[in-house]
Image (cartoon, rainbow, N blue to C red; front, side, top):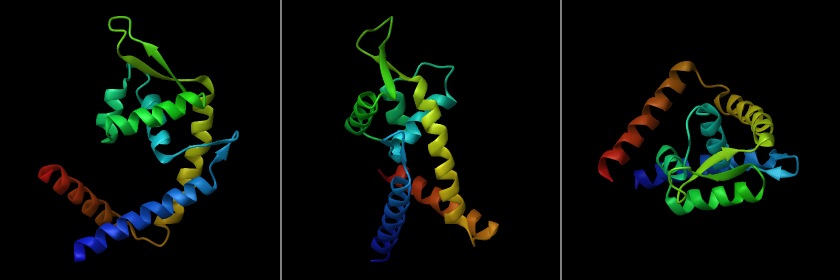
Length: 145
C-alpha cells in the first residue's frame, strides 16, 4: 500500500509541475511540453553529433511511438526538421530549426524559475537526500524491469 502512495505522490508532483510549466508556456503562440524541451536541450547540448530518433528514445527512456509522436508535433510546429542520412535514407537526422533555440532559451528560463519555486524552503541536505532517493528508485526500476 505504501508503494502506491509513493507512486501517487510522484505522479501528483509531476502533474503539478507540468501544469505550472504549461500555464506559463505560450511563447510565440507555441506551447511546448517538457518532453519537447528535453529533446531540444539534448540536440543543443550535442550539436557536434548527428542525432536520430533512436538516440532520443534511449536518452529519454521513451518508446518509439512516443518519440515519434513528439517529433511529428515538433516538425509540424516548425521546431525541427528531419534530414535524410547520406549513407542510409531510411534514417532521418533530427535537426533544430533556427527559431527553436530562441524559443528553447525563453522556455528554459521559465523552467529555471519553476525549479527555484519547487526547491524553496528545502535545505541542501533535504535536496541531496531527495535526489539520492530518486536515483535509487530509478536504479531499482532499471534492475527489475
